[in-house]
Length: 458
Image 1 (cartoon, rainbow, N blue to C red):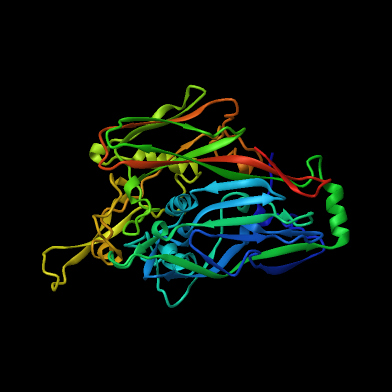
Image 2 (spheres, rainbow, N blue to C red):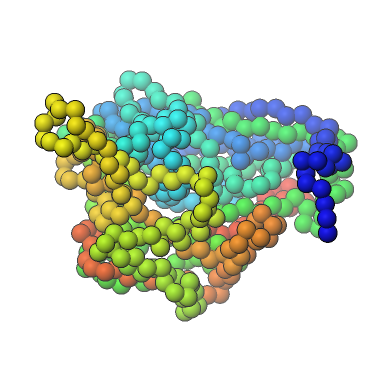
């Protein structure tokens, strides 16, 4: 069948939207004005007739400062959050735990150094340094630092706007991290005792239809009514001792459409230590093979393999990029590696400094030496910083002709099956590790036409 290219198809004109108006709203928390580490922030969406909110183009604005002693944020301000829940009339629609570690990992897989210097520095609470990419903004006890964070998991990543014509608005709850986990001390003998967040508001755009347009939309709804699909993330964790060479972790991932599983390793002793990057510093721990077992069957059929002896983790990174649909994408940006400054001589007064690539993805033991702080990390160009992560793609349709872009979702059905991770290591790891597993799965969000409340199925 022949057709004209779009560039000369003058009959193919875009259609004008139905009668509507767009307004920007700012929603304040319902549980206070100032929040401290370990606390929580609750924001409830309003109920507005004939209106829809665009969560994918929304952001949480706030300002933050240190309490007790000056410190820097671990990577970005996402590390200030430990958990995010979404509820509707007490029913849990989405619940992401170990929030900061996931968002740090996703930023490494989707944000290059240029974006970190620009958008990251201005909005995300990053220090904006490509050499010290995991160094967050410097916080003082006297002045606030402003942040504006979008979110890209849960219903925030839905491709449809959310109906606000409900009996009770959806509630988002952010649980704040501890200062020892989320901050890096300016001086190792002056640890941060906390942080304070103030002036919080959710900035969003609301699309309101005229009564006539709303009637037309209601009449055009199919049998599923106001339903939409979004990608949820579940978290599970395990631990590995230094000498363990095989690890089988049983995961609670039982969903009708599991699309990928992301796996990270972090040094266990770094957790809760403000002289370490507790959240963002990751290790490969001599990982040699990785796969899933679903109902006893391996996924993929052949395990993903590495050769730690020669720092060959090319297959792990390639499979990770496949799972996020960006393998071979020339416009995709990664922030896994950094540069370090070296000299031809030991004389710092000579002008012989040059930069070399620091392969942080191949860091076996993601940790700093003892009693370190921000200044030590800068002087050593963040030696000991690791960014290793591996993801297993479980989407049945991997080509560009399938997936969400073609109107289908095709994750692996794990309902009724035991889902396990099988990890093999080439040798003992330097330190004991905390292993975090994140299962990405498809959920259907539907508005009950009788109760006007949201329900979720997955």
